[in-house]
Length: 426
Ligand code: SDX
Image (tube, rainbow, N blue to C red; front, side):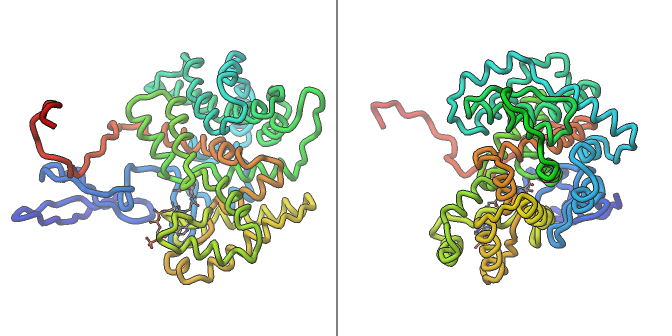
């Protein structure tokens, strides 16, 4: 990184702060030296704060570019597959044929979960939100894998990453089966990753139907599109949890919890709920008006993004996949028409244009998931399943070099020191 300086004048003092330059993207001002002035930066929501250095993913929000280890998401979605993308995110390079075969086999051999893990499900109501169950059972994995909890051991970090990528589909399908009251299905080593997940989701011990290759390919592509996205809220949560030395399973459970919010990964479920609420094209104007009304908390779910001020490249690929899957399956989903009309009207509205609000990854994903037969309540679980590799890649990256426990400061605006008042005098 080339060094140059930024000067900060505070009173009669001048502080020189290094300006660091990355491979691509905005320079950053290294404010670590600011502590010598007895002052902190103030940046709620981290609107202009870089929390770390990373080599995994780069987003150019103005031009709608997303690179994983330098490879554009459009190319990975078209030419790669999820496990190959996992290898790339975890290791930094695309695998050769031998490395890929070994990685796939390694994942296959870790897809089963400890049989006793099933007992955890019985503590949940059958109608519990699937994300509540996922938080619980993923966190519980740390109670089973004591042999891989030394976060300072690269081997332990590696096996934890493999276990998490391998087991998330099994756990997600178990969550779904539990909600139905159906027997949980074991993973099969003769099936590919997405195919295996769909097998565990939709087959039963009484009948095992082959999985449609079209649906399996679409599922795999959805996993690729959700794999990583630099320092989003849930990834930052995983990094913060990891910085205290917490074990990887606990960190991923923290990431799942953060992803659940409707402003983040919960948006895919919220989009379908919103489309249901809009119901018909004739109601779109009314809901767009609600989204623009500052006195109305309603937002257009699946629209807007902290970084993208142009099209989210994932949304474009998702829309293409949506068209492919629906036509292949011969489904004419009125909600797709409604979503497209909503996008057209919103994109031509000055409020959305002025604020550079475009459809994000969540806008069309739910329509494909619904076409595949996945219930709305499971949409964010699918997001968590796919994002696990991004979370654990960032966790590994942080632990592979020097790091400090994350501990932000604050601007205190509460009372100054005052003495206790006994209850008789209050
Ligand atoms: C994901 O960070 C990531 O990378 C996340 C993600 C990933 O892969 O990890 O990409 C996944 O979380 C995608 C986002 C999914 N969330 C939604 O679709 C929920 C709806 N979107 C909004 O809640 C919002 O756009 C956010 C949360 C996504 C971004 O919010 P910001 O960056 O804090 O922006 P903001 O809320 O300050 O919005 C700026 C302006 C505001 O209006 P003004 O105060 O300028 O008048 O745009 C308005 C907002 O009110 N606005 C919207 C809007 N999104 C922003 N108005 C109506 N509808 C919306 N969806």
